[in-house]
Image (cartoon, helix red, strand yellow):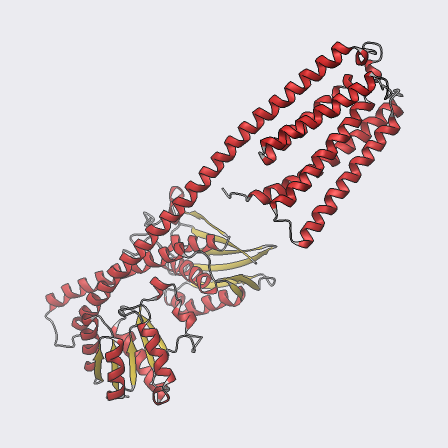
Length: 445
Length: 132
């Protein structure tokens, strides 16, 4: 899982608040027009429409503010983004207060709307002090409305549905004080709980992040260790191989039949072991590379070159090699050498496991942001239960050993690592006796 | 170009003796050196026709430095340099790609260790033919 940077998350949340507000504005407009046009209810529709306009204005200001931050490049500044969110929450509190005033004051069911802001603030910023401040502002705003309506300084508006039942509750001091107290306690308790939970989650996230980094470091150390040791082993192997090659070349005279056979066995095994070590080194090297050096190159040309370089080898094995490349497939950004290695190795595998008379097709298709490349052969195929496993290190298909004893079982792991490092994906579909299709994607950029 | 004089610089004595045997079998005259300093001395005194250089000797950069020094010396700027090494696996340098940049890695050929005698011999033949 990718851990999202805190500031990026805040920016997303700022936009998310704006989105939610558009929804709230639409709902407010719809309900108000439904109330006074369809049901002909006695509501303060003008005031409610003005509130909707205020919401729209708030959203426009917030959007412009974010746009300006984006342009000036200060969008990464955490404090600045916090200000945008704080502005939205405070303005929202005032708007909710006016909505409550026009929908029944202390009797309005919309008093619960304050909770959204308190919860949002506590979760988004995990700054307990400011969350209590937001809760306090809400309590003060609701208290002021209740007091002003109680003292009849502000006119009281009734929700039409409550008209017959509770007309005078806002004049009842017990009700007002009781309601305000329960409201305040609920809000503060809400801040307390959400802050606690979100703090705990944040701490956990930090711990995971740290553990992940440590794991990554250890993996790097392990890979460097493998690299160093394998390199040293390869040095010795190269020397052994080099010395044996002098004997197999008969430089110092011919060996007798038996001597020759054993030296040649040893020579062949040293080459096998060197190939194994070479693959292990390559795999470890790909793993260790933090970033591939990427540049723009012609994928079309790379595919054509790979085919041209191997067409003779395929024909020697009586295998037909074809390619179909979409006209749109041209340049991509990537590491050309590694992609060439992927194509070459996939093609070699296909040739190796295809019987004489078979054919191999390489297709490249343009898929908007990606290119899909398929290497399709009519070879021996891979048993279904092994198709997932063949990309694992050291895994060799059960039916390929009779074709080649010397495979290292790392070729496909190297390919997979390279493709993943390019942000692509690789998979296989295959049927025993009918052939295999290796498909991989590469992003254009 | 039989009888050509080849300077072989490698710090692995077993590799040196075996490559020397293979080359001498083909009537090449072989001079060996086991480090950069010895290599430079032999280069000056023997004036070889071609040099086979192990990139990674005692320190990672010995072979690199030596190839650059050879190229900057006007009396050797035409002498073919054959790099014989497996350095790319440790340093991440992609030799085949780096060969394009002659300033950075002034070598004319590159073979991965260990190399089959026939590959080594045909590469040497090619390089010597290009020179003459």
